[in-house]
Figure 1 (cartoon, rainbow, N blue to C red):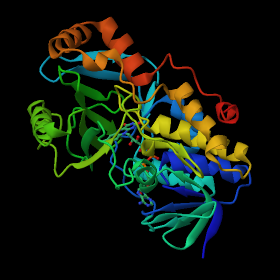
Figure 2: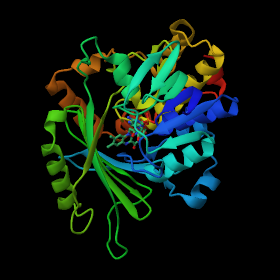
Figure 3: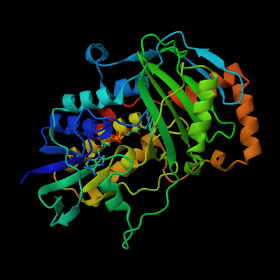
Figure 4: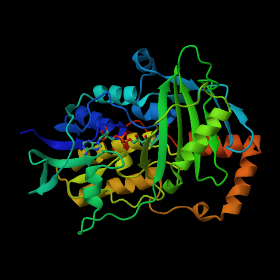
Length: 380
Ligand SMILES: Cc1cc2nc3c(=O)[nH]c(=O)nc-3n(C[C@H](O)[C@H](O)[C@H](O)COP(=O)(O)OP(=O)(O)OC[C@H]3O[C@@H](n4cnc5c(N)ncnc54)[C@H](O)[C@@H]3O)c2cc1C
């Protein structure tokens, strides 16, 4: 019967980052994932430089065996309007393939992995946990993504129900471009197409000879019409000869401003999508998965084996400090439709606003202070 002090559920960026820190600290840690790696994850695969920093990622080593596509600029616009190019003249982000990225990070962490094993059952067992009836752990880090069973356990009412959540629904397809085809997306210039109501956007992100096309919207009920509309636009623009294949794969996630998930309790913390931490409006969730993985590891180490709600509560405060308040959408979320349409027209019509507000603030988060490498984690 496998047992451990800390069990991490999920081997995505949140879980593998947390695992790496705990392994380095000499903790007795086991990571369980329902998948065997490498595995696919529905995601455009855009990472910002803050991700590279937070992971202390050696880009030369990474690029030696994995796809790493530098981005130097963006083409943006409204889905029903013109396009605008914003050139940074230097590398401001990267494209990765999640299948490769997640497997690389998990292997790098050096953690003991129980792969191909879904968490089906979680029970309190004295001061610890019994998982699937056989794994015993004193502490659990729930990093199993949006549908993480640990997040469900922590957030369900006594009658087994969970509260309604305002999710971002997203669908994408990633496919290899055939050598002879002339895809109109330049690898260094991802293309973003916004709906005028600013409730979602579509993207075409090329990573070497692979193209990722997808859409994300705040209103899941708009699917599948949204996908049809966007695929038709991509075909009309002649981005890929012969159009975009199907079927697209879908997933959901929460942005931190609307997430109301409880993230800490006796013997448990949640990290990454399990905690609902993606940044708005881009939906960037890899960065916050990694940052929360670091913070989760720091609190576990600081707890020194005393995994009570009281000792772990500082994690919640650290998340709020770093990522922002949760469950409190800003005033912009309640603007009437006509104001958002006017605002979007103003942004897409201006080179300065597109660069400064949309791309630098909304997508690259260039003015967000960097997280000390390991430092913030230790200063929880
Ligand atoms: C269409 C789409 C596009 C996106 N594009 C981007 C982007 O370009 N850039 C960006 O930063 N973010 C993007 N995101 C968000 C990003 O994908 C997530 O925020 C990020 O993957 C969260 O990482 P995580 O480690 O928390 O969870 P995940 O990456 O979801 O990993 C969770 C792991 O838990 C495992 N698991 C799940 N259930 C169980 C179980 N019951 N038992 C055991 N294991 C389990 C899974 O197999 C998985 O390996 C996108 C999301 C979507 C849906």
